[in-house]
Length: 281
Length: 312
Image (tube, rainbow over all chains, first blue to last red; front, side, top):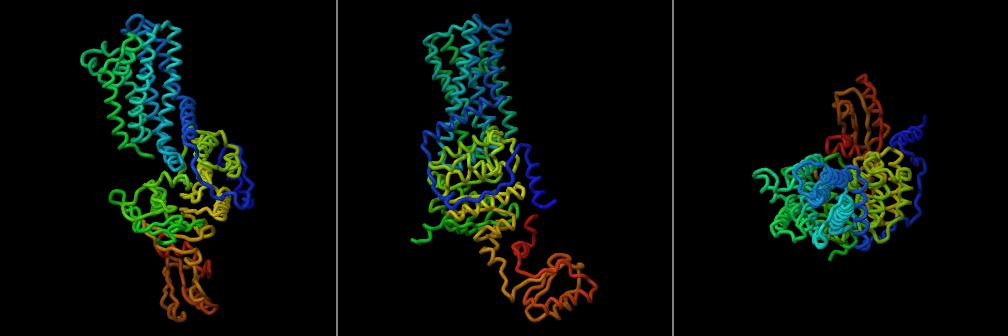
């Protein structure tokens, strides 16, 4: 066996996919003549947002977290006679499930994605291109907002089928509250996903998600939680978002200043910390 | 103003970087002209990646100054990044992204990108266009990373161990690509611990170890030896007595056992010298195995400078 043959077969064995192996191209002079430059920033933002959204939607665990679990909980809690839920059940449940959806995408989904993106070196890779830093961040934010919009449509549509009657004016006020919630939880997601090792991020992001679902005013309304947990939940971002969305959608009133303030504080603290702790790799 | 400043692709002086108590690079000077290829050669942990990351603007040096294409790589990174191509060590992509998607994403940042489809084809990635990044082999990830570095038609590329994890065939392909880049006037700053990569491709080589520059020059300069400075290498039994050999050799020749059983004679090497050496071996009843006369290889230079193997 010649040396050439042996290196060829090693090359084939490298990957289990068919691959061109033998051709060694010669390059015409001028093929790599320098002509650098930056593309249109808006076009970059569009491309980046599309890529980030597609990657999230295509990821099976992300789909489970952001769509399937909230959908199952929405249907289950609205139709089964379980837990302390006010009547009509679907009107009480839907705002809290929307808050859960926001937390899943903004916090847990973002943290895990960022943790593994850092592990695989993509943040550094993209930082090394002509992509401006603001486009990289804005692309992620817009992608998260797009996913939340999709969740809202799917979950809201399902709730309507289940007999949900949201307040008409409340729907309009709920939109900025959903956006605020996504940004606040997103800041928390970046804080966790941007500083820790990927495995640690996975553990922390899922544990926090589960804890807030059970005891943070999502599965059970904050005011029905036992003892001090009830008042604690009001100061958690999950409880505050659920309360704000409940005010808009169930009661048709403006969200209380208290709930918005709680959200803003969490967002400001997480954002300020994340700016200091987030690392590229 | 020094006219050289404008023509330099990379100019660095006194670069020093510490991580905690560990000094990763110390007082490194570096000069790369436009369209030139410079190899940083050294073992793992020598400070090559730190040096390159300072030039790319990912790290700010604790001391020293660096200008890349006349710009400060940290403070003016927004102006610099579109003009350079970066291949980080170990690649970089979204774990779930498909090969072609990733390259198109990077191409979308560039004003006049090369055709991504063509790049994938010449880099032998045609068959894995829709394979997720995390399922690519190490060598395939490296080639995608190289494609990402080149797609924007940069003036200058930083390639950090570009052929690591590649088999011989892929390595030859990448070497041909790097030669084409240089021929088209693209500056290349390359790190490697492969001797032939540095020796055959580069205009100039810097040997680095423990964060310091040990030697620099063209491969010829580093390995040069005129008639008076050739080397005779051979292997034999360890611990032979060198005294009689030194006495028998002509004036100006030196002989030493560089490693146990590995002997080196330097100086005026002619047929008479060779005869003296073999006669000395014969008196000890020892063979002179792998007897070789020639210029020093970069490996020899490195071993001599650092006392350790490059591929360790």
